[in-house]
Image (cartoon, rainbow, N blue to C red):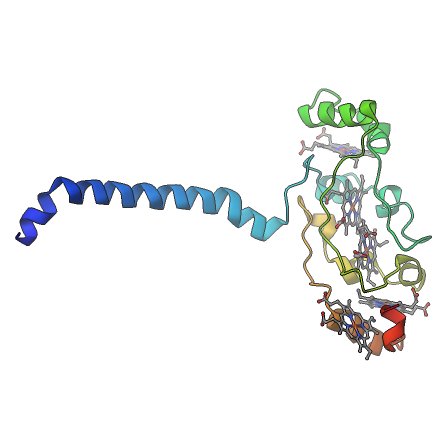
Length: 177
Ligand code: HEC
Ligand code: HEC
Ligand code: HEC
Ligand code: HEC
Ligand code: HEC
């Protein structure tokens, strides 16, 4: 077989078409699914934008994350809390219709966790927030995000660096109880 006959063969045409197909499908999967996931963090059951609510509408973090200064856990808003506004604001929006269904069925919205620590680490928001740290010190520019992503991996160095700088506890039992 000469090079020319290979180039003209049906098998070569099929192989080329297949390769092009794989590249196109791979490209679509990458740009529509994988790339956004790398840039924006995981998709949520209802696409909720901190940018719209915090930056544009100026809603305070603590309106939704209501227990952040009182307990270990920051607190997540119930669907009913969203409906304080959304009973009146864009109630026909398809995502708000879905939100209303969660509230009617009394099922919590299954938000996916983005920021987390392993079980062997003890962390409480209360003391941190009361000692005048700002949410951005640990969570970055959530206020500008359309889809929350954890910008700083919460490893041990993340905690210790700040504790050292601010003379907060560095003994093992403080964080590993
Ligand atoms: C204090 C009032 C208020 C609360 C509370 C509130 N929202 Fe909104 N939300 C708004 C306003 C205002 C808009 C912008 C409406 C518009 O674009 O006309 C909006 C827009 C939206 C949109 C559409 C965004 C888009 O890109 O089109 C969704 C979805 C949404 N909110 C979900 C939620 C969820 C989920 C909660 C609860 C966790 C919530 N909202 C709580 C006021 C509120
Ligand atoms: C109108 C309600 C609302 C306001 C205001 C709000 N959040 Fe949220 N927040 C949510 C909802 C709903 C989620 C879960 C969906 C998501 O991750 O987008 C969330 C998720 C988060 C998460 C990730 C939680 C996890 O389980 O990993 C962090 C961190 C966070 N918010 C911080 C903030 C900070 C900081 C502010 C203020 C700058 C703020 N939020 C203001 C409703 C709100
Ligand atoms: C000192 C660092 C630090 C500060 C300051 C901080 N957070 Fe967090 N936040 C964390 C860590 C670490 C987690 C993960 C906790 C876990 O998984 O046990 C977290 C988790 C969260 C969550 C998910 C729910 C939860 O409690 O696990 C929300 C919502 C949140 N933070 C909101 C806020 C808001 C709002 C503020 C400001 C008022 C704030 N955080 C300030 C470190 C911080
Ligand atoms: C940006 C600075 C900063 C970061 C980051 C930080 N801390 Fe702290 N932490 C402090 C300060 C300041 C105190 C002292 C508060 C006081 O004495 O009232 C403190 C106190 C504590 C305490 C003792 C008080 C309590 O709440 O029981 C624990 C435990 C703790 N931090 C755990 C952690 C863990 C775990 C992480 C990482 C996930 C972390 N911290 C990240 C600043 C920070
Ligand atoms: C200020 C909080 C804090 C203090 C103090 C602290 N740790 Fe940690 N430690 C963490 C966090 C957060 C993780 C989770 C790291 C991760 O998920 O990558 C961790 C993880 C670990 C791990 C699991 C391995 C790893 O790196 O993930 C070991 C072992 C450990 N710590 C030992 C210690 C010892 C020993 C001390 C005392 C010298 C100590 N830690 C003090 C916050 C702390």
